[in-house]
Length: 322
Image (cartoon, rainbow, N blue to C red; front, side, top):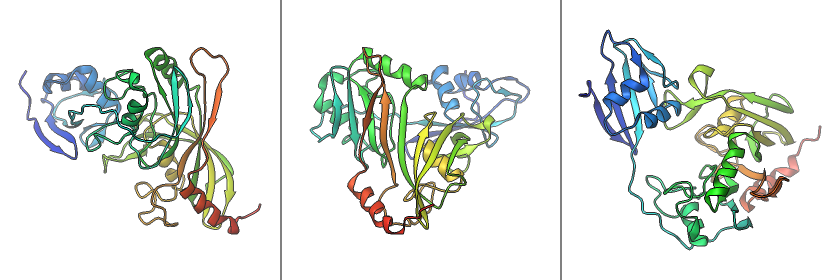
């Protein structure tokens, strides 16, 4: 079927398709896109819709079955695939645990987890391939062994599977939300309560599509984070945060949503960091997970990186005791 008024541009590693639904024809959004965007499967397009990459008349739609009535203007963002040959690289890794099934790494801040547009080498996956070549192809050609991710500037614990059996075993735990994850976050200001639970759906920011945002339930994916305050300072607080779901940038978005963004987060927080940080103060400190063949959950810990500990030490003199 010929495309209807499809205007396509490529910007910042994404194809932007602008379409107009034919007047007087009612049909599902995913079906319409599959008919108009040749070379993209319906399943692929459904995934883009769920990820918040599609807008209808300026509003983000996350339901593939959304009903079009005709005449709507539709914008679709499709990440541009880059031909990347995965390279095994000799990059030092801080390995916390390893056996024949898994490898647990304390990822350094600044390291991208997997190759993508603009980051073909130097990633965690490249480093793990250099350390354990047999992981190649496990669970996917470009993201071998990955079952979860950390942002580039978030340090801390990440687990990778070394074979297909382990991949499926770990993925099942993440999907069932049985994995225990605890992060340390230094934030600007203070949360409204000593302990709390943030329930706010997350999706693509309608104004800045590169960012995520807290959205009404109908426009985002359900997301839950719990926190407790560990220490307080005049202008900052140290929190322990447990994400109960695994949305993109979840902790950073949720903490900003309740008025205490992560210190050093220039995307969701203050444009000018308050403590001279070169990165945001977010660290995946603890991970509890069952390993293949074991019934009891294993618990791993990673200490704060030196640069974050120095910042925290500098605040200790102003600690508020309550």
